[in-house]
Amino acid sequence: MRAVLLAVVVAAAVLAWPSGNVGRRPGATEVRAVVRAVGRLRGRFGRHRATAPGGWVADLAEVVAVGLRAGLDLPGALRVATTSPSVRSAAPWLGERCTTSASPVVALLEPPPAVDARTRSDLAVLARAWRVSEATGAAASHTTAAAAASVRARHESERRVGAALAGPRASMRLLTLLPLGGPLVGLLLGIDPVSLYGTAAARWAGVGGLVLTATGWSWSAALVRRAQRPADTSGAP
Image (cartoon, rainbow, N blue to C red; front, top):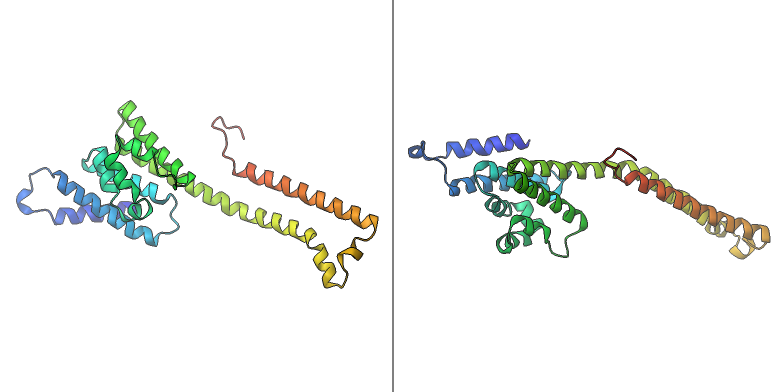
């Protein structure tokens, strides 16, 4: 879908190009116009693609990559990408930050305090991609596109893990609430809690049930945390 969208925008730009300037190299104004059109269309399609993983940071990275391929430098491509509707609505602070920060990397690594931890992590991935480009001389368009793909892949992986763990979490809650609902069931049957736990055996059984319930909850929660934990880069679990 992204490739088709980009092809449509480029074709429209070619058809709208002035006929007297066929041999002239496109200037920065024309390049920015094409990149802005891509950003607007991406934002418009993004509203209908609510399930797409990655969020606005991945959209930002992809529009920046388009600008870099079109001939803009990194600061210029980032400033143009901040005008994308999806980015502007999610991060209105980024446009001003790009004009006041010393570099695009600094602009991403110093978000406002209200930005959540996941978004900070996504921005750090994009900033590291630009640092790799600066350090190694790799094309910034390639590292930016790779960062966008990495962010989307991580969000998709988290979504799949969350969906897979929805059943175990529901079972945890159900199996925890069932023992705790014993006194309520007794009240429905006309037995008050004093009579229900009036004997020593009943009280010890209740204490044992609470201990086993807490142990089962802790054990299940540990298993869920272990399933959510990413694997080590060495391949160890």
